[in-house]
Length: 369
Image 1: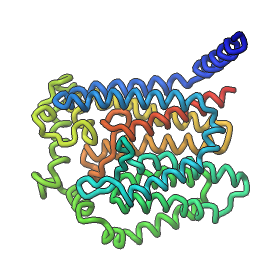
Image 2: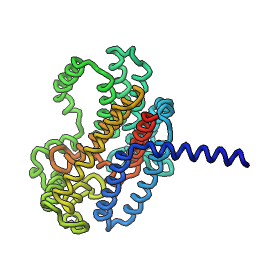
Image 3: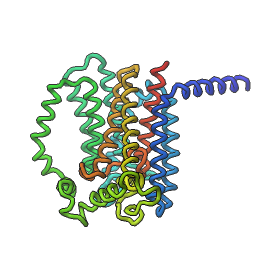
Image 4: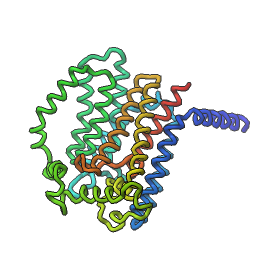
């Protein structure tokens, strides 16, 4: 009995010591975003009480995962990178074979609870590529980057097949971020960009009709104000009607009169902009910029190549999520269905973001040892 008590005491001391070495700035920023997100979602979804209850559960699960992962040394995370990537690919294959189809897209897998495996790959891909470059160490040569691109292409191909262009782009950016920070030659980057630009006409023909319509609607949403352009126009009206200081919490007319589609998920920024105005929008942008900057700060002070690459990729993930969502709602990017980090309704995406934060906390703790 005394031995058990002694072990429990040592474990408690270890956990407490680890918590005290957390990056408190990162933790504070994330908690602020979650709080602001729930307040906004409560207003946007008060007529959908089950969504508010679900989001409370999602937040609890995400925070629990975040704290559990933060206690895991980053070297243990590195050891499961290959297994996580392989499991994600198998889940994508299962989704292709027996997935749940909603509105013509097969993106979900029912395993008792409905999950979206493509969301997992947003983290599993950079974990795998960071592991690969860590394994290669200083022996990295030009063909390592080509092999990394081949590894990245496997999950991206699965996701495009679903089809889910938005998630495929996010997974690609997360993977390419690791390849970039691993030290890819600038000439190779230039060549890849030139090839990408040259292939744009071909890529245009490969897009689905609804994807091409979204891009055309971006240029002029008034071409189809009651159809493809409806989302963008209503979001812009909501943000504009918020003015300088907003209409006030729970006072947004565009949201509460059901003019803003997907107001609890992809277009929650429009609800926030209407109720908290330009001032609130600027403060929210400062929070996201602080989150991204802190991620890169942690990456710069990480002790291993794996940790540096993964932390930098997570910073890019935070940037891409927030930039694409806010740009989409503001009418400067096509509507691609990307959630706003820590604010949009959703379980799998919030869980992955929580795990990403937990990894950053773990890296920050290890850097202080």
